[in-house]
Image: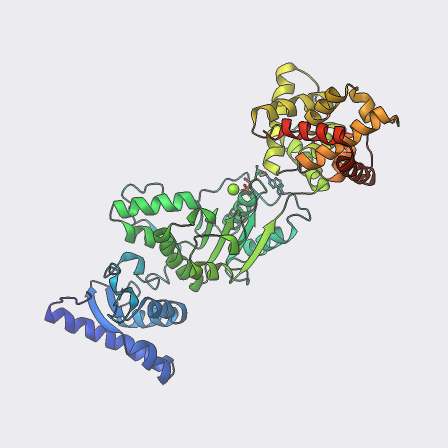
Length: 480
Ligand code: ADP
Ligand code: MG
């Protein structure tokens, strides 16, 4: 399948060029390596400055890419010049179990060499020739949102490592051992913010570096368009010139084999040329299903750092920072209420703050705890998760016919204590709130009181039918 019908004259030229390459290569590596990795290569064809060589297998190709990319570059420089490009074609031998698969296309652009343009970096005369048909989104825009910076990324235990690694990478892209840097964490925990901050920092510091932020969705659709428009080579070339590639939400590449393969080549090329790669994912690499092992193993080369749900203090700091950024002052009481009520993720916290601001300006009201409560309730009603600590408390007080202030108050009467304990139990079951935050909503009780309440209800449910009935009824109300 890879018999290339090349005219005799050209064949001779390609042979000469390859012989010249081999001269350089032979002088640079051991006899053994030369025999193993370079003797089996057959020069294919030469088109302008593009040399195509035939290699015996995918593995062979990857090995060359991994180990000899710089050497090949040097050889090309010598034999063709700096614009020299290399393309591989992979020969599938008949003994290979892959023989029944559709052949890997000769000169398949994905296999075009990452060697190509190794030395090309940032000057615009190199970039501008790539006119993408229908890929106009691929201009030199970095797709960075200047609002995401390190300055407004609040540090806490939840993100310390990731932030520090991000900062190290931003300060010395491609140089630290954090290459690639992989940031993972649940939705709304600041992955995009952090990697954008890295990009912005680098862009401001080293203006001549080509920083590119791209979501994996966008990468995928660009790739598909490139195939459709026969401009895959342009697509590859474009990405291979990037100095700092930031690719967001790589879990999106799961199961997209062709896209992954292309990404893999770009990745290898950039990495080998000392370019920085930053990625995010909503789960740790080992849980990325449908991502090829060889890609996964690349993800493990650098550093993997996670972002966790911010703790209470960090939530307070984030709210304060956002309020400051909006130029408004919010009473500490309200901030505390919010921090104790929303502990899922930062995006949700922000969403509530925005609505709160809107509410306050619409109704010309002060932002107080009452307004915060109402806002939260309305927001929650509109979302899937109809559970807040306040709706739980309301349901419990309704069921037991007691008053909210009593539930939150100091009364030790059994008619009050039991509903209070049930409400705490439900809060633990139905929300992610910490014991400390639950205690806060019950008149500032401490976490040991909450633990005691939960245990009591647990015990009672085994022995008291009425209580277990009430608890399951209330649970059902919320778990529709
Ligand atoms: P993800 O990409 O992980 O889903 P984002 O980066 O989009 O999350 O973050 C959601 C929102 O929360 C953004 O507006 C971001 O600015 C904000 N945010 C997240 N973490 C922090 C933090 N540590 N400090 C300040 N803002 C944060
Ligand atoms: Mg994101």
